Image (cartoon, rainbow, N blue to C red; front, side, top):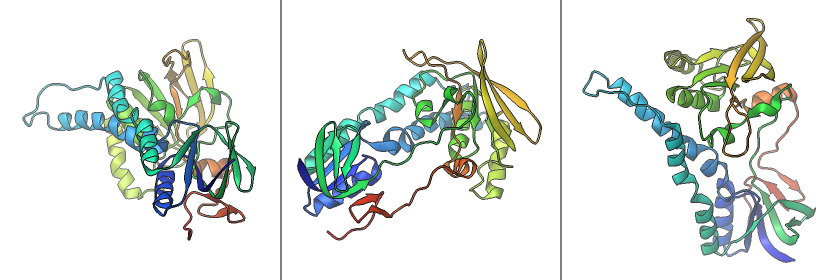
Length: 305
């Protein structure tokens, strides 16, 4: 069994900051992750999304300059845009591990399982620590509706080799807003189902109203006060059924095969965590609080070493 001052579970931004500061203070540190090192922001969130947005912004800028010295039509080549995104994300895990090694931080690949209040096991290897930091982030809460197995999340959207012609987004948060604009500018027919009475409920309503004009211009069909009830697989596509103020509705979404996995796609779920929490009341997170006698901590908690 190897003993450390700090073991960090997860390798995203929080893990990087905490491990670097503790190691700089002269303490021994290990980082554990069962996924490629780098975390959500660098691999499955902010950064790859910005790469896709850059393509959408280029098309938008060219269209707004039409008649003002810029001529011709631009379009998004989705496979090339995804390939461009991967030039940024693919090198991240190796670079992260190199940074850890340069600082003298040990890295372990695999699921961390607690074997005691101050110890975890990683692929059969026991690690003991004075302090353990859980910096794993969160994952989407599954929608408990018939056909939920056909729904994908933002992780999978950012890796789509080909973009479906018809896409349905479930939820009206900021991820759905961003991805709907990207997909629409890439030529997809996009429908958004939002349970609330307007998109982006946690943002200033007046600003959102200005943004909704752009949704209309892009042909994005936003259906508010509509709760998705089930996803039905038909012979050629999917039907997303919703209930709401306008009664029962159904919108078609296309099939898509990703690489060699033979998985059918086309329906995406981006409901915000708070909304799902309110509906299912299944999860609770005690942010910035210790959870085990001052040894195990969630996210970042200031400590005196």
